[in-house]
Amino acid sequence: MRRLCSIFLLLCLLTGCAQPVKDYELQTTSATETAEGTATQDSTAPTTEPKPQRVYATYPTTDSNRKYYSGQRIMYYDPDLRRSVYLCSQANCKHSDFSCKAYLGEGNIGYKVIGDWAFVSVNNTRDGGPCMILKQNYITGERVTLLDLTPKEGYIVDSMGFTFIGDRMLYQYSTYLYDPEAKMGYEQTDHRNYAYFYDLTTGETEQLLDEPCQVVTYDARVSLLLSMCTENFLTIAKTEPFDKYPMPMEEYLELGHTEEEYIEHYEENLPKRNIYSVNRKTGEERFLYSSHEAKQNDSACFRNGGCSYVIDDTVYVYDSHTGEVRECFQQENIGWQGYLDGRIFCNYHDGDPYGDNYRYLWYDLTTGEMQAFNESQSVFIFGLDEETADYFYSNYGYNGKHYISKQDFYNENYDNAF
Image 1: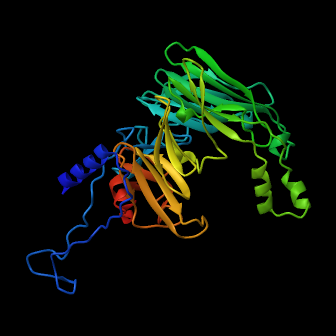
Image 2: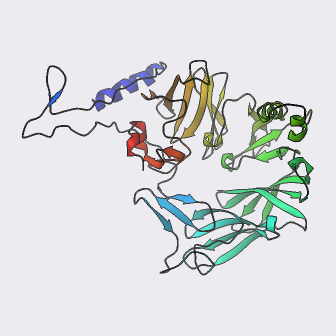
Image 3: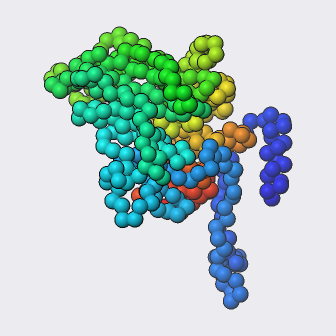
């Protein structure tokens, strides 16, 4: 059977025909069945056999199943062992101060683990503390400050993030003059966005951006999509200037409007955000899409140098390693789409986005196979937020369970989530 399926798929690819969305049934087999279709039992065979499960190809971007948690301590969850692990080997350690090699400090912490080192951003400027990017060895406890980004007095650092491209770290943050009396964001002043390359071998820094931010939204006129940047191409977002600032909520409510109406008023007046690919060698900019036109680009759509988006019912994938845009498939009324495990996942409705008539499918970027799910709801039964090599992770989960193996997910065995 597997060989026949492979031959059929190869013929489809060679003939260039469009792949139809296939429905499939996962049958439960029994030892024997009566004419009425009910199972009978004998003394030599079990009543039922395990539910058949198709094995699907996976395309992991890492060979690790560790999912690291953000916070003051270096720790991860191992879905194979089904337990959390602190990167600290000291007996009876409380992991609450710097005597613990996994402890990173106080403030707003972000980190990435590479080898024996955790690269860490520490931002405590809200409480008058420092802002730094450092690395800490979780074996020896050694700490090395790479960058001190503490602003001058009165300023706050916000929206810090970093990623790695080869031997260089790409980082971005914004600063603004803090006014403790300000009730609304637009009352803060001198808000700017910065982005840099930092060479991990030489310590040299290259500035990429120094841009003012829009008031109210804090959107920089130009910012980087860090997870979408590579050595050859940067992915940037350009925010157009406001035509008219949204009215403050207090004033809008005083006119007799509701908070729901204010949300519509606010969104209608937001500036457009256009996404471009920038060739690092030539400086050439290529327009990809506008956030006002592309459908449902949320955090799950930006993955490991790849980005999926929908324009006029056509799903595209942008590869920031090569700068290429690929047209994948067409589907009307897409409600949500995301890009994980080498596949595009999406749901679509019958024309009523607020109804219950939704279907789900995925599209394999390697083979072109398109597969429909049997079960349908207005939201994914098991959400797709992050992935490891063999598991999907959901912020909301299924019945309070946040992990599921990719094979169980593809086979819709949601009860196997944990």
